[in-house]
Amino acid sequence: MTFIYPVDSNKAHPLPLSPEYKSSIKRAPNKPLIPMRHTLSELTGPVYGHETVRDGDNDLTTQHTGEPLGERIIVHGHVRDEDGRGVPDTLVEIWQANACGRYVHVRDQHPAPLDPNFTGAGRTQSDASGYYRFVTIKPGAYPWGNHHNAWRPAHIHLSVFGHSFVTRLVTQMYFPGDPLFPFDPIFNSVPDETARMRMVSSFDLENTKPEWALCYRFDIVLRGKSATPMETK
Amino acid sequence: MQDAVKPNGITPSQTVGPFFKYGLTPTGDYAWNDAFTNSTLTPDLTGDRIRIEGRVFDGDGVVVPDAMLEIWQADAQGRFADPQDKRALPNASFRGFARCGTGKDGNYSFDTIKPGVVPDPDGKPQAPHIVLAVFARGMLRHLYTRIYFSDEAGNAADPVLALVPSDRRATLIAVREAGKPVYRLDLHLQGDSETVFFDV
Image 1 (cartoon, rainbow over the protein chains, first blue to last red):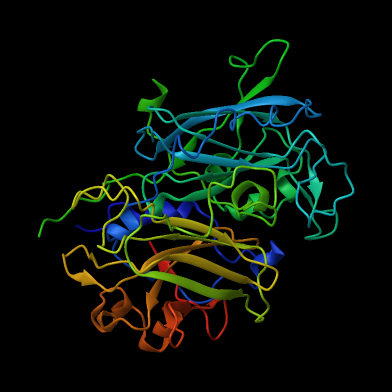
Image 2 (cartoon, rainbow over the protein chains, first blue to last red):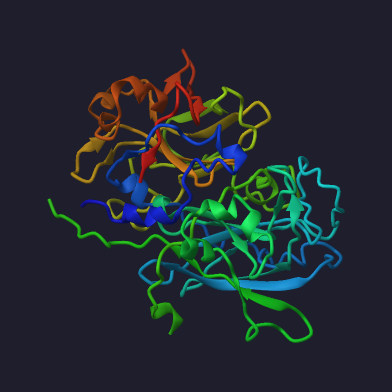
């Protein structure tokens, strides 16, 4: 067999070196990546599921004794591959700042309050059709020192495995209409506008729960399989 | 139906950022489910137990304390804990995956077993290796590389190592410490000693 997951799909990703994002300057490889055929090592991947995800891990608002502060939201969507097939039983992990834009992390020194009722970490597993769902708090924007008046647009970090090690994806979900989009080098590190907009969730009134929480839909698209014919030896 | 629509491309990658620790690698430091650790070991696991240690450096040779490494590997018989690997009985006792955040000195470590031989797409043996994904603040997409072992004669015929210019192969080969089942491999994201990363 030859490439099973087409490498061309990777063109949607940011270039490693994106100088406006200053931390990339000394951390992006300078030498070209070496192409290789996928072997079983790349085509298989970790399988994690019900033994890893506990009841309630997908509700970040109920992990402590009290209610977190901020705007309760539902985040849901489908994990699919680029051929449109749902990706079932895949682990989706999230982490995020609280409503004030502060992370529960010893190195986050943003002078905004921590919320004793919000850790900001969750995980779930997509169902048989690839559908996933979280309940959480809308994260706040926060300053990050990359340049003068640098503020990250509100975002939720997502980590998705898919069904092989080459479908592994870490991305960020943004919220529609954020005024910080034009000024954020991380968001804009994705050069193609249509690809960039795939990181922006859509407001979902239909699944908004009256008197309880707004809903945002975020579909995640992983690399597809078998777009290149297989050779038999 | 929404699922029948072919999307016009994949979701782009974004940096893992500096604050992933409590979500992805808590290991007791934060009140959260530490399902992922830097060990693949279970009590009933068979194979030669090894430890891999090293540090991560940036282009200035400065340590990277906010990186995250993930490994994926076959068991001692060369089988993957994945239903897509149809070659043998399921090796239920071995998960093959581990995750480690770097410490303040840029250091990482994995406790695992020496993997067996995995065939390449033509059925030829690959030298024992571990697949490694590197994530960090400043990296907009994670990078793929491999860990080989200095005491494996099969390295000389490995089809993936053969793709790498000979003067860069050492960046992929963890060096065994004398008399101990410990291998050392430093990662350099950039610079003269830049680790070889693969386009997969």
